[in-house]
Image (tube, rainbow, N blue to C red):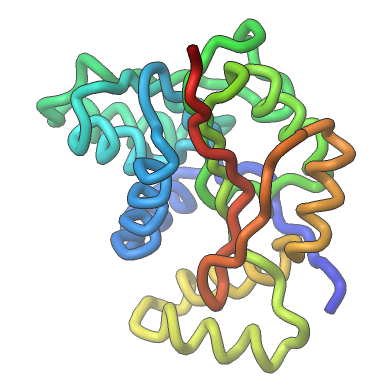
Amino acid sequence: MERVLEPEVMDTVAEAEAYDAMDHSLPNAAFLERLLALGACGRVLDIGCGPGHIPLQLAAMTPDVEVCGVDLSKEMLRIAEEHRAVSPHAERVSFRLGDAKGLEDQDDVFETVCSNTILHHIPDPIPFLREAWRVLRPGGVLLIRDLFRPDDPVTVARLVEKHSGDENAEARELFRASLCAAFTPAELEAAASAAGMAGVEVTVDSDRHMSLQTAMKATG
């Protein structure tokens, strides 16, 4: 099945609020579990943080991190700041406007770099992957998780019914479009290689998710 692009930025009030209202609890929990298992620590950059769920949950789960969330959508960041304002961990979380394909950060400044389900929004993944790799300290933790594109429309329909059948029509269509816009594991491996990412692995994590990852390497 050919890839069908969807908009890179969800920046209307309706889009941001609809995404924030969706139930992301199970995939977010799996993402955070993997991130901590890989050794996430120190300064963390969440690229494409959306409404801030991951940074705030990560800060709540461990006192050893400071998390910066970056997103290209002002409306997503508005909601993220609303969530941050009522969080007891607000002092260890920050949000800023930024483009995944051209981050303002210096090289090698984060012990952990992560991204949850924004890869499929980006037409060409290589600039994004290069930037994520550039700002990660050597030996640090990387976790980029996204959907992967099914082989055919029948599988897409089955996954939509299985995982978003209880959501409203707008949410189901958003999930369907995201599956169709996603990369395959082989495409992600090729993009990581083209971006110069050495020592990373691509794993298939579920019937719809894959991850590009590295674990924390011991130093000394």
